[in-house]
Image 1 (tube, helix red, strand yellow):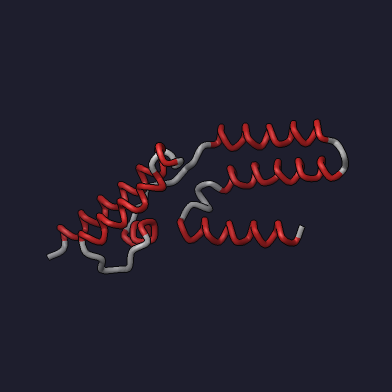
Image 2 (cartoon, helix red, strand yellow):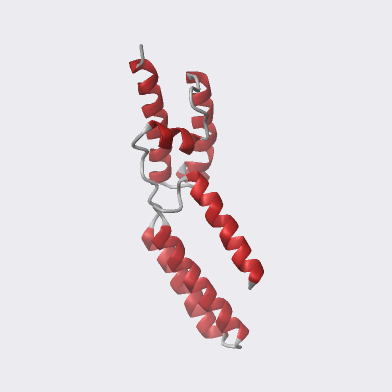
Length: 132
C-alpha cells in the first residue's frame, strides 16, 4: 500500500507540473477510488465485485472526459508548453510540436488537451507580436 501511495503522489506531482491535476481532479479521484475498491475486492477473494468496481472506474474515466483548460495568461501558457520566460517564436513552435505529439487525439490525447496546447502557442505568439 505504501508503494501505491508513493506512486500516486508522484503522479499527482507530475500532473500538477503539467497543469492537468486540478482541471481533472474529480476524474482522477473517482477512478482512483474505484481502483482501490477493486484491489481490496481482489485481496478479499471477491473477483466479481472487483471486476464490477474496475468497470465502474473505467466508466467514470470515460464519462468525465479530460478537462484541460486553455491557458489564460502568459505564465500558464509557458508552463503548459514547458518554456522559459522570453522564449522566441522558434522555441514556441518547437515546444508546441512536441506537446501536440502527446496531446493530439490520434496520439492518445484529447481534443481539449490539443486545444489547450494550441491556445498556449497562439497566446504566446500574439504577446510576442504585441510587444514593441
